Image (cartoon, rainbow, N blue to C red):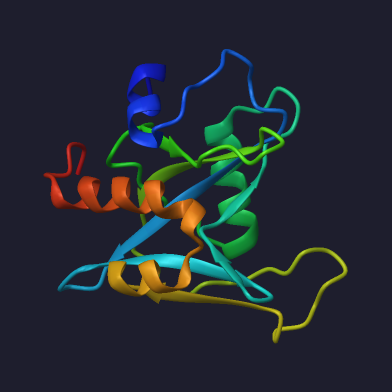
Length: 159
């Protein structure tokens, strides 16, 4: 996304400095026959989309796909909306999370827990409507969710 467009969306001036830490994830959607549902993952009391840190020279899209597959078992992601993405507003330390939009036909998730953490009570997932997503997701994901809503309302370009 061009810097001018991102600056207009966030209302914050952007610097030419890359973020110190970039995380990448996928907003996974599934058509339930009447509407799209979004996959939200829970770690303790925080909800998010599947997301993980980008390492080394790994591309953000590759990191997003790999992390989503590793944490959910999803391997049928279709990027009908292309490689367009949205990023969160930077944290004070410059970290941002970048999200892509993809569709799956899979309903059942094989939720994987982080290494050393095996309590089902601490982790979970839900397929939520947009309204439910607004209720459970943290405010830092509002720009991403707004973009998803706009994308889902327009004709799917590559479907």
